[in-house]
Every structure is written in structure tokens, then in C-alpha cells.
Length: 270
Image 1 (spheres, rainbow, N blue to C red):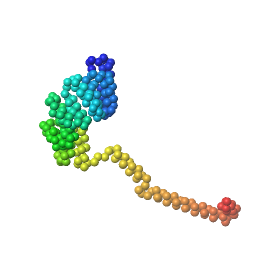
Image 2: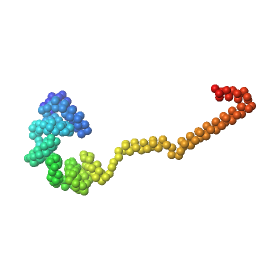
Image 3: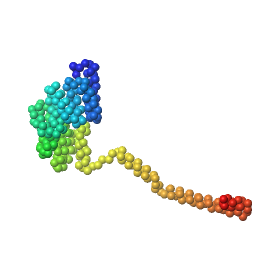
Image 4: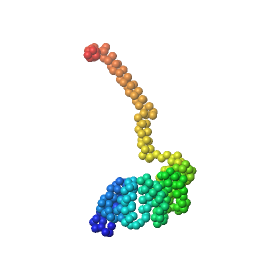
């Protein structure tokens, strides 16, 4: 961005920073910032590349492919080749992706790029219903290596997933376990897949606490020792005793206090 005026370059840089910051957690937000950067500096390769990544994250494959191609023309680099091939897959053209996997550009990729291209090619085979060919495509020295590289977890995961799709469950479980070992930053859901195969079910801690609270509330409505029933019975006993005492009082007043008894009788009649 050295060719841009300082103020404009700063504005573009701020938008590119936001693209990088949001692209994993908020792809739509990242896409919005990428469009702003693109309007400000469409002739900058870094801007076109960022716009491509943002569009790719939002599954806008046609747009992403156009941006990646533009960035490649500006820089002459081949590092975006696997992403361009995967965009072809996203557009429903797996055959084109396979053609790109066999192109000379692949030989110019670094090891990470070549592994990425292998993953794309295997995905294209699966898109075409060639499951066995996809499994063979993933079999490589990188897959067999015991060393853990940035791409190891994803490669092992893809291999396990293909094996499971081919109904080779025992082998799939073995490779999901290997993927878990290599997945240090949680880039895959290999642990969940492995647990699912083992029949392990997880309960959300918050849900479990809510259920426990509900059980406590339900239990508090009905006393376990019958205290509420005892209290009701005691109240009835008190009422009976009170009524008896009142009757005794009226009886005592009647014979010895004629006027008072007459007054009470008159009240009763009213």
C-alpha cells in the first residue's frame, strides 16, 4: 500500500485489520470491512486477497474466485491456487478443481500448499462420488508422518471422515483419535466425532444446573414429612375446640342471665 497517500493507506489498513480480526467469528462483518477496503483501494493486491478470503468465508465462491485471480495476477504468486480450486468445487465444478490439482502450479507450492491442494482434490473426488479415490488421494507421506505440522490435524481428520463414509468404522476411529492428538488448537471437531463413535453423550453444564434447580423447586412444593397435612389437622382441631368453648359460654349465660340469653337469641333470629 506504499503507493497510496498516507491517510488513505491508514484507512485501508484499518479495514484490513478488521477483516483479519472478524473473519473467523463474524464472517459477515469481515466481508463488510473488505468491501470498504475494496472501494478505497481496488488496485492493491493485499486488498483483493483480503476481499477474496472474506467472500470465501461467506461461501460467495464466484466472488472469491474473481478476487483471488486478481490478486494472483498482481503478485504472480501461486499460494492462492488451492483456494481457487476449492472455489471451483463450491461452484459445483469438481472436475475443474481436479484439473487444477494436476497443474504445474502445484509444484511451486510449499509443503503446506501442497497438502491443502491434496485436501481439495480429495474433496473433489468425493463430490464426484469417487470415495475410494478420495481415500487414496489422501494417503501420502504427510499423512503417515508422526511429526505434527500445522496441517496434520486437518489431513488426518479428512482421512478419517472419508474412511467413515466408506463404512470402514474401525479405521476411521483410529484416525479420528490421531487427529485429536494433533489438533492442539481445536481447528477440527475430531474429539466430538470420536466421542460420537464411542457412544459418549455430553450434557451442557448450564442445562444440567437448570434441571437440578427445577428438581429442587418441585421438591419444595410437597413436604416430604407431611408437615403441611399435620398443620392443617392442627388448625382443624383448634377450630373444633374453639367452637366447643363458645357453645359452653352460651350455655352458661342462658340459665343464669336471662336478659343476656334473650339478647343472644334475638341476634340469632336476626
